[in-house]
Length: 537
Image (tube, rainbow, N blue to C red; front, side):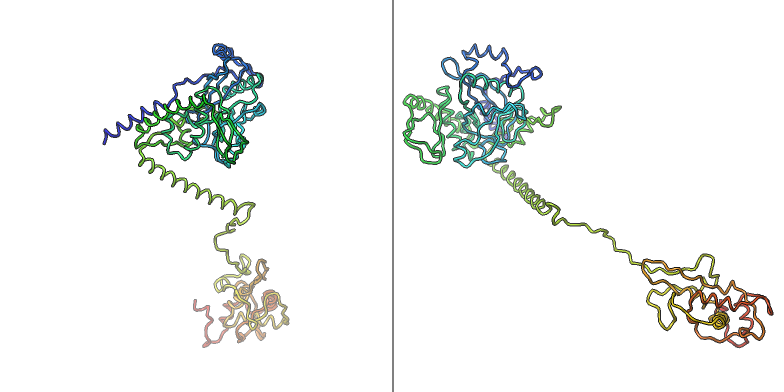
């Protein structure tokens, strides 16, 4: 088993070695600090000397070719024999999405196809330093229902559906395009391809859902490789056709008219395709049981994550698919794709839930309002009138009863605040009688303590109860109040009236000496009568 894995790894390594380009990426000798005008920047002496060595005029036509997988942008330039040679190759700093064409707005895919670039598509005022609009969607894209806007080649090394270069690279590319337009070139052809369309790479991507589309792109790639001239192309029947003689009108969505290929091109293509078929069969044997895993944008970013250290947040390079992808066994790839599919479903479910929540809470509608106070609301308490501090005496405090919380019994007497009419004599007798009777000392104090305010939210000022413990009275012989008067249960009276009655029954020290009322009355009670209840204490 171990030997099998070692052999498989060796095959993968040898195969991938053939996938990488042997071309050296050119370094850019542009010092942005010395650039005073982005649109009038003059190419460095080094690149001008290279043009001269390759028999290229400074203003001769150019062609741009992009390979996504390799992360490369090439500039080809016409020499004096009108053959194009590769002048520069730049490493693309960032491109978003995965291999495959752009389908719709917002899918983060960078376009693939053939696009003519006119002078008006150069943007010197871009927010991304400098930019060239790719012209997506072209006739082919529209015929196949593919749409999107503002797909560019620009600087700033940050992509969302674009091909992003460094600012230094973009300065040089922009100057090369400007000089070509100055030389009379009407349009610059942009070939945006998924990878170098060799037999090995086509075999490696044979299972891709975009394979048929790529085969169509490969026709133009092959003809450029043969002629070293940008192919002329048109669109009919929703396909590209290259270097064809047309007998009728071309309709991008209609059936193609009669087409013919020049004999010289047919012969060259026959020889080219024969070699290609041999190489393709050889590649299939190498790839027996193996398939290519196409990495995601996040996986490509992870490869070059260290490059972001110390750079601004907008700087977001992406690695190449060759560095992040790999060959895998079919069973392993199927298992991995199943795991990725589960993660994607979970992600979509979260997005749906989030969208639903945002919709329900938009503009503050249907927002659940939290309870003002989750604790139980406090029960309103009825306030009672309490005697002033220092009044009421010992007996009043001892026999004090809580105020009633319900409505007062009408039979018990009037409520506080109701008028009472009583003569001074009757009031005085009542006050002394209550003091001398069986309910004496506690009755007055209790009756006054039972009067309470039953109004919610307001305090009622109650009269101060009169304590019979602290009052001293003089008992005269023969006075109506000398003997205890048998009385029934004391009726509640107004505290103010009761206080006045008690005061009316008080005489200045004549006859008997002054003493506390409870003790004097107790001594005058005849024997055999029941002792007052406070005597039990």
